[in-house]
Length: 36
Length: 153
Image 1 (cartoon, rainbow over the protein chains, first blue to last red):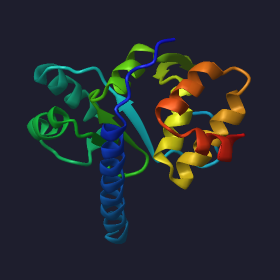
Image 2 (image 1 turned 90 degrees about the vertical axis):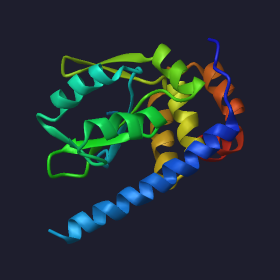
Image 3 (image 1 turned 180 degrees about the horizontal axis):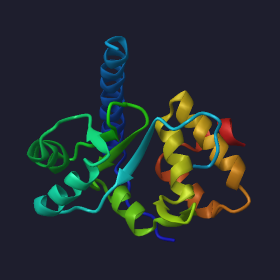
Image 4 (image 1 turned 180 degrees about the vertical axis):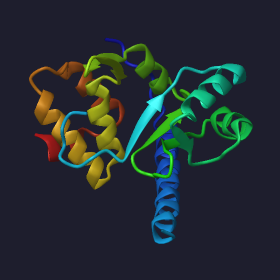
């Protein structure tokens, strides 16, 4: 099966952004829980 | 879906690109039971998030977890995933998932403890059925052969 071209630089950028977004989400979630 | 003892926190869904009008219809259907955790505006959801390749999170109303991470394809890898999706029947409902030969290496690429445990679980569950040539190709392209040998072999 032919696999796609993988731009590792782009994926690493995605990984970094995804990690940052997850942290922001966890922060938002913990504020939501604490406000209950 | 494949039985790790913890419950899922988020489910990533890649959705084929669609125009604003079609997205708007989908948005109001989703809103019958779910809410968007990023924004309440359908315009912002489309033009500020999806259009700029940022994902949206949807959850059941009043709940944060579990949630769906909804995005349009951004990379060639995303487009390949859509093209090569695998059909799964779950309680008579049809779902599509990305090929496991990509899921496993990609989780190793992400590299958090949770991702590595997920990769190990999937590999142990399906190792007799995987296309190992394809999996090795992704290991090579993602440069994670070392992690694969360390954590999964």
